[in-house]
Image 1 (cartoon, rainbow, N blue to C red):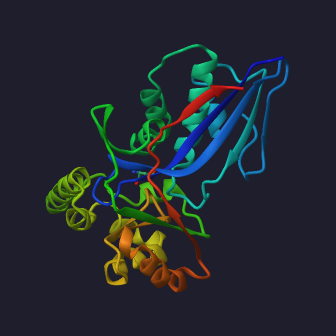
Image 2 (image 1 turned 90 degrees about the horizontal axis):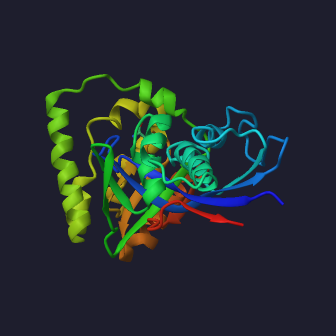
Length: 284
Ligand code: HSE
């Protein structure tokens, strides 16, 4: 019998408002990858509408460390495919982690996954779990504060991350950079101390969300209205169009009741938790 390993990797929401390409949270929805040694056979088995050849992102992650020939990859995922929830990061991390385990390695998976993904935020959250801040090729972790609830809005219509990245200029005005430094610092302070007022003040962004608003008009409208719906605020999740609505525990039901009619017909709503546990791999 060939070896079989199972990798389980969380979704993630990057940026968290001001922390463009630097902040992310792992979410309690997962991708699972089973890799089995099948000598002479390469196969990708999945119900997902994704590539089943060497272009598959799980396989590309795996092939950073091992040749995929002679392995079968079975991929299952609960992560909505709309965009903004770290699916590609989860796929790269799953492939890398499975190959690392099979080769008995202890490699720099963050470095390899960051190279594959092009930026570190989603892959860091997927690997380590919790809330992460990416800095100098490493991460600093934060535990989510008590009393914070998250509501995920996943639009039916996807946005391609490549388009969202192309919508951003190479340089931003100094005033926008200053705004995001201040808000990112206040958000971090709020998360670290459990002060949800500071979290609410820190969620604003002037680097990426407005510059991509034409790609996700419904999502940006929700972000702009989140405060009046009783939430602490809302952030475009990664490159969008998914939205993360941030709420106090005591207000969550009321916020959901306000959101439901607003998202009806174009998006799915679900409660999500920050996933404390990062990617896991085990032998089957
Ligand atoms: N930080 C990235 C972005 C996440 O906003 O483009 C998307 O993968």
